[in-house]
Length: 246
Image 1 (tube, rainbow, N blue to C red):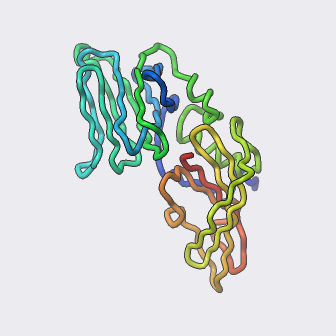
Image 2 (cartoon, rainbow, N blue to C red):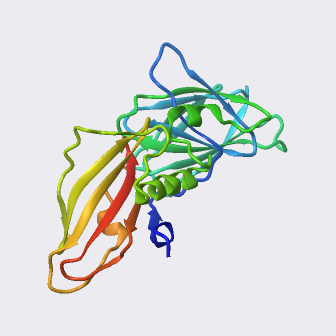
């Protein structure tokens, strides 16, 4: 059995899209091409209000929020203002109310703590959006966000550095302990908006321990993988890798 086939992966945020974007702070809104009828991922600020400028004079919003959500979404003309609250992600479809039978713009907004307030002007196009995700270095074999995370952890399991990532020589990660399992930081790879961090996990207890992804979840972690083993005998060591927001 190959190493890749032994990887256990849990995606903590499941999203589907054809591209991802992270607008940098500048003098005006970032122009982002989107394809109606498909999904686009945008990293937004988790702390500040973000602005989406849509191409419709009369936009209609279709929001997917829990009843107890603390997120706030409002419209003023062609601008949509989003405060993400405590949401891990927000799905939003924007349609032209004047042509309701036409496909809408589907967005998956991913809150990121260190991202400044985003101002994004959405520009519909007839072809799939590719540019921003590839330029960011966080686009690998697939433009699907879920596949992106899987590719990152698979490369990590093979000890390969993904395209667009570099080793952080100054990283001093924190030692962790979950029950009788101790995790020592090993290596960190830096991308444009994501990082990949490696740990060595060792069971220092007297009985076997099953590794469960939710026990290792932290704020900003998008995917977790245990390499080679998910049941650790006493004294046994395995590798863990996670993908998190930069």
